[in-house]
Each structure stands twice: as structure tokens, then as C-alpha cells.
Length: 425
Image (cartoon, rainbow, N blue to C red):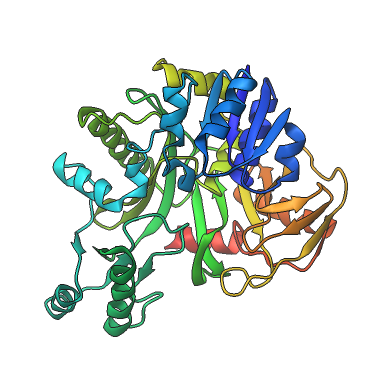
């Protein structure tokens, strides 16, 4: 098969490697990712010109395409590829609204009475915003309606110290976007469940937990994700199977509701959930593999990903997708100052350090496999694979000596101290 991949971060590097296990890869990249370029038979740089990508796909006789990043799913590219008879295993722009419009997602949950919704309201003017806070003494999450790269949400009691800061931030969003989403703050443990779907069948991947906060002990501003963990039994030690099943049913209900709405979703979908003392709550729904959580599950995937793409596209998805029974811990190397004032730098990687239990995925970088040039975003996803989360975390730490340069990494992700704290809670 000839497979077209659009995107070039760490998540896409993981997809590219799965494709190359069995089939030919052609790529549309947003940065000159040395790993993806090396895996590809042909590459073009992404521009907001769908015709150039269509011509590239036709020239290379593409059998199936996968459009990965959220910002590109928020364009008409998938629809244009489909109109030109190029099969795509990703949602079109309307279906991707389950991620790109939090207003659409919340309205869908309310209309179809889907469990897990959070008390919320959308506010379009500052006078109403002031009255809202005058009449409420609860804490809220302040959210833009659209995409923010994981960095736009601020929560009272965390990133927002008081009501005045919440009003100021919400006002900034109204000035920019015309409206803001206010969600009542929930307390609990977050987790991600990703799934393949052809709009009817939903096949779940292992549960993963993402760590968005910049600093150790979950302090500092939100980022695109500093790392993530998964366990060998496909759930996490601080979650019960009942909690996981409740979240899975919510995700199945969302897929079913979109089909009933006349907006069927085909591709990879995932829910960011929170386990609270009054049940599972939906923090957000996304229309793609997560990053970093998608890298964990792709590393574990044993089934042929191209077959999965074809089945999602054709509506013949089968519940026989297999994953390795291993734990994973991913820690992102990021440029110095990332999340605050990032600066570009150079990293040197010792040749051939990857093993069966340690992988490096290349993200927003250029250069070569052994000498990478960072941008202002995440650089390298280091993932350990072991029989326990602790072991996988140690594997990452043991391999840091092979990477030199100026960078930042959260060492605490997946450590025994962190995990014992979660289980005790």
C-alpha cells in the first residue's frame, strides 16, 4: 500500500514507523522531521494549499491517507482529498468539530443526554461575564471555544488566583474570539482513552495519563504535554475497571450521537476524562491521536495500522486490534525555557541507542537523527517499555546519558514516588 501521512511531530513519527513496518510512506510535513523524512519515499512541505497535496497524492497513487494534527483537521483538507477520491481515515472538518469547537461538543452532550457533562455556560459579552461571577461563588475553568494546543485553559485555584484574574482572562478571550466557555471546576484524576472508530464500531486503546504541567510535582503552566504513562494491563493502578468502563461508554455514546446527528466520525477519537467523587466527567473530546498519549499506544500496537486505517475508512472495523502487554513511560525533552520563553538549541544523540525497550521519537525538530535542531516546541519523545511503570521510567532515565545539549525534562513522570502518591490518594 502507498500511505499518505500529513503531520510531522512526535505523534506522527510514531505513526510513520508503524506504517513503514508493512507499507510505503509518503509524507506532508510541517517541519523537516529527520525521522519521518528518512522513512518516506517522497515528502513535500505543508502549505495551506489542498490542491498541492491532492496532486502529490495522485502522483504517488495513494491508497489511504491519514491527516493527523488538530490544526490541519480544522481545515478542509480531508474533505478535499475525499472529493478527489483519495480515501482518508480521518474525520472531515465538520466531524472534527467535536474537538475544534468546545461549544459543539457540550451542545451534543446536552442534546443527547450523554453522561459525564460538566456544568457550563458560554458568555459573549463582558457585562454578562461580570454578572456571572457576581452570582456564582464556585471556581471555574476558563476555556477558549477553539484550539489552543493544550495551553489555553486556565483554572481558578490553579493558574488563576482569584476572581479578578479569571474575569481578566475570560475578557481577553471574548475580545479575541467573541465568546468564552466557563466550566465548573472538577477535582479528580485525569486520564485519556483513545479509540479507533468507523462511526459504528469503537475499538479502545490502552488507558494513558498525560502530564501537561511544565514543572515536576505538576506545578507551573500548562504545556502541550511533558510526558505520559500507561500500564501493562491497559488501565492505570489508581483507576478501577468500573471507572474505565464508564468512560468507554461515554465515548461510545458520543460516536453514536454524532452518527445520529448526521455527522458521522471516522478515525481516531479520544476523551480526556476526570475521575471525580461523583462519577467520570468529560474534560474534552479530541479528533486524533493524542500527543504524547498517542505515542504510548502506538509503541504498543501489534496490529497492522494500515489495515486499521482501511477498515476505519470502509466501515469494516473489527474488534481484534492487539497491543503488547507492557507498561510505557514517555518523557519529552523540550528546549530550554519551553512554556515560558523557549529558545532554539542543538541536541546530540549517540548513534543506535534505541532498543526493544527504549525508543526516541522526533518531534518539532530539524537536522539529522544524531544532531537535531530544536524549535520553540517539544523536541524528542523518549519512551521506556517495561513490565511496570517504575521500570519504564527508569529505562528513560538510564538512557539520558546518550543525549547531550541544553534541554529540560520532567524526571518525576512515572517514578515510584509519584505513582505511590496517586495510589494513596
